[in-house]
Image (cartoon, rainbow, N blue to C red):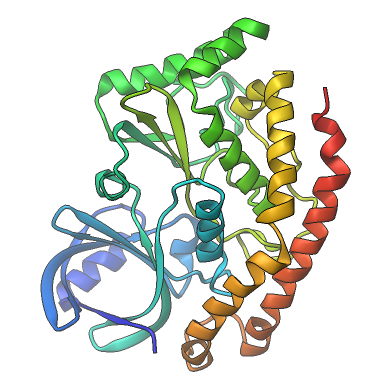
Length: 352
């Protein structure tokens, strides 16, 4: 059986919460788990998913933050968890996850995915010294000079980001990073990127996003932080519900949806260097050999399924019927097979 978390919220506070679905304001409540009951602040989280009948929540317990994701569009309920487990396996620190049952005022809301927040505690647990942290909140976080919506120059090169850790100087440093990304060329660009970007982390993150097929993972759905000791930017994945053969709305997609070279301006700059392209190509070959395989991934899928299936079958809040849930391991297996073939067929693009 999955662990249970209970939220207790008064009628007046519940009304406030539902009147301000898009406001981002917190409402007072209590969280009960393991026999303990503590005061919390709660709000809805997510983008288009806030319009769904089953919503996702962000909870603040003192200085700690928890994300309860409904995973409403994902019939497998495991794509986020599977993606973050995969990223960890290839050396990219990623949020921890835990499936659970969520109750509100005694009424079951069904199966949820509890996701670790990327914040100071995230870095402290991993003994990572982070000087600053920004969240990529929308498509404008694509490292480009122009807005993807208007096609015109952005009013601010910090457009699309939210500063979570840091000060104005850290905001200005990221703007300078984006600006120089477009001003430098050739060897000067490569040398500068070597000083300001953790290339090992970035290429592994890029490989993870490309292999799992998250089309939204390049211009949002990531966190960017500066490593204090090296002064280099590093990246953390976030929100990978649209992956492994389905998009963020749950629709089936082809295995070639995401190109091998990714989709943002920073990746274009990184891969303009023949040395970086070759390093990335070798990394992909290594991952295809050892990590991105049915033999390595499908046991993880089975592990998740064995854990959540009994509660999924009795969960009446789900968008998808049980027979679709039952078929998802095969969807993921087929995606792995097709994606491996697609990546191998595109590998020549990376040759100098």
